[in-house]
Length: 298
Image 1: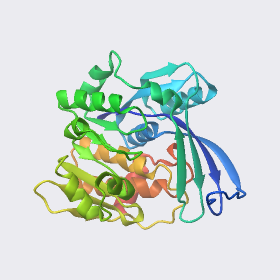
Image 2: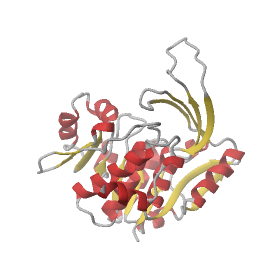
Image 3: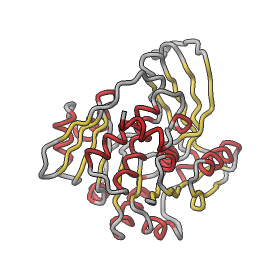
């Protein structure tokens, strides 16, 4: 069984479901409110665990009720939380509005405990060294993301970085990244190019492989010395796209760790993501391996 380590955030998602998202200065009435465990790091950990990997989580939660629930959610998914520390104060939160237009969302993240994850602590590097892949995102301080990537590089562990929230990336981090996994908005922010293919090719000057997720259009894969490849997504009716990218990242990490060729790994991850958008919530919507296999072969 493959071993995936996730270094990243845990958040409680505070989700409002509305018919139409409000514009600036506008108030709308929603139909439902839910608190759902999430955070890009925790989401990717749950996705990878449900996809069949042994998963360990490095991060932090607060000593509040949200922190207790976040930890227990990861543990119920089979994620090892031995390196998930508890800090004084609040856990991270994400304030999400989901509308009826294809399950689109807008998100505001409050880091709280995640902001304390600004370095590796004793034992973290050893855990990373034992992994087949390290999943990284940008909802914790860049210093810790860089430290994790450098530790993985030193031990020959594949690094997969989701550059979200999008921001300029230091050269040292790009040099330590094996696979960059932005969506179409993030890749435009990183490169200033609106065409995903052009943007992905530009990023190959910095990293050896890029996968740009394109929502319902699937994904685009680019690697040095190879022709870019587009993999379509299964056609489904989306209810809530929150966590779809994290589902894709977790499933992709598992597929690659198991040695699947990249085209098959991308199609399998796309099947997992397609299942997730048909259900509300982030971690709650993520499929288990038998579901992914069935969707992939259908």
